Amino acid sequence: MQKGVNPDMKWNLSGLLVGLFAVNTAYAAVDCAQVRARYQCMASEYYPLHLSFDDGPALQTSDVLNVLKREKISATFFVIGEKIDCEKIQQTQCTQGETNCQALKECHDREQIMQRAAREGHTIGSHGYYHVRHSELDPNTMRQYVKMAMDVSEPFLNTNPPLFRLPYGDGWFNRDKQPQVLNALRDYGFQHLAWEMSSFDWDEKNQAGDKIISNVMEQMCSRRKGGTVLFHDGMDKSMHQGRVFTTQHLAEWIPIMRCVADFKPLSHFEPEIRKR
Ligand SMILES: [Zn+2]
Image (tube, rainbow, N blue to C red; front, side):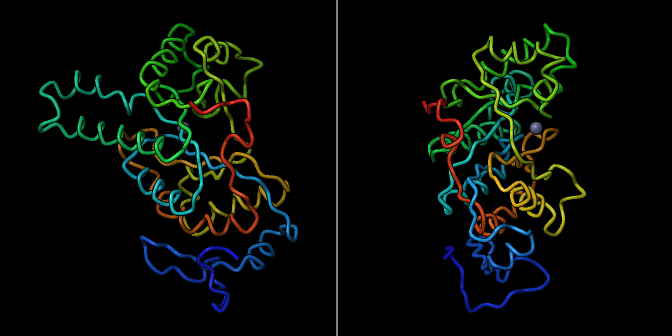
C-alpha cells in the first residue's frame, strides 16, 4: 500500500486525488486501480523512473527538495550556470557586496539550495551557462559558453564524468548535423544526459488541472517502460522564479506516479556514472 493512502476514502471523479489535507504534508490518497484504468496501464506492471529537473536553481527548488526528502526519492537537477555565478553578479550588479543587494543575496540562496540538493543525495549536472540553443551559436562562442558552464558549476557537479543536459536538447537531437556541440561537451569533460519522457510542464497551456501528470502517465503506460522524465523546477528567463505549477503540484503527482513507477536513482540507468 502506498504511504498516506486511506483505502476507505472514495474516489473523486473530478480528479485523481481523493484527499489533499494540508499544503505542507500534502498526503494524497490515490486509488491506484483507478489510475491504472484511466491511463490504460497494464495490471501490476511497474516501471523504473528517474525524476530530473531543469532550469534551476530557483527559490522554489526548496519545495521540490522537501517533497523528494519526504518521499525518499533521489533526483537529478540540471542547473543554469549564470544563476549560480554569484561572483559575476557581484561584479556587475552588486559591487558593494550583499548588503542591500537583493540579486546577490538571491544568488547565495540559490547556491545554498544546490548545496542542500547535493547533501540530500541528488545528482547535479549543468544545463549550460546560458539557456541558449548551442548549435545556433558560432563555434567559438559555443565552446566558450561550455567552458563557462564548467567553471561556474564545477563546485556543484557531483558525478564522474560531470553531466550536461543541453537546453531544448539542441545539439543532442540534431547531433548528426551539428556534431560540434557534443564534441565541445566532450572536450570539456562533460557527458550529455537526455531524457526518455517529458512532462511538457514548460508549456503554459499544460499548467492547469492534471495535464502534466497525465502526460507522464500516458507516456509511461503506453510505452510500458520507464526512464528519465523531464520536469522543470526553474524558468530559463528568470533567475529566481520556479515553474510554480510544477513545484506546487509535485507532491500530488508522486503518489499517482507511484501507482506504476518504481522511483530509481540515476545510477539505475547510468551505472557507469559515479557519484563523487
Ligand atoms: Zn531548459
